[in-house]
Figure 1 (cartoon, rainbow, N blue to C red):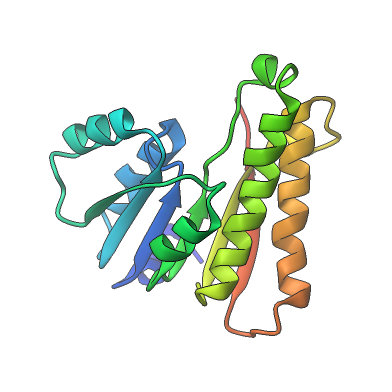
Figure 2 (cartoon, one colour):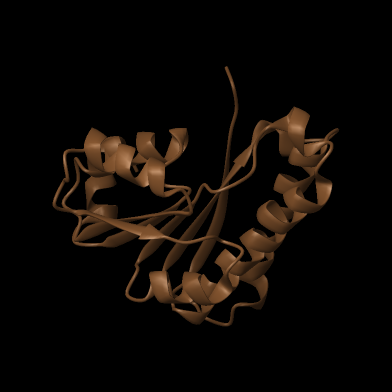
Length: 176
């Protein structure tokens, strides 16, 4: 599929972005608002960043702002009702800080990712995309290890899902 066909993937769909107020989330919004979407749900726990994102996108009519944490499974289920595509970009990412806060990295980057995958399953989301990192390849730090496990969670959902119309995928990006 070339980029000219990408619009058909999103045509009249509802997309939810976890970590939607972060750097990557806002970059995704910039691209997604160019497509014919039903709505884009911006899911994040930071109300200040929600306000900043609303201001940046001048209250774009397709955007819906949902405060929530991927550690909260019930809130995820609620936010995912009626969603077609999930882009899971929420994560704790500061390598230096995570080395001294391993439990918090596990709670957000592993258990939170498991919550996202399970909630997608339970709400019949058609496509769930896990945003990983180049640091998941032969990980040498907590962040890379957590993202590696997150990739495995999403991959495993394809083998145990039993729902042929669902797809769980992982993509890696890196600092270039």
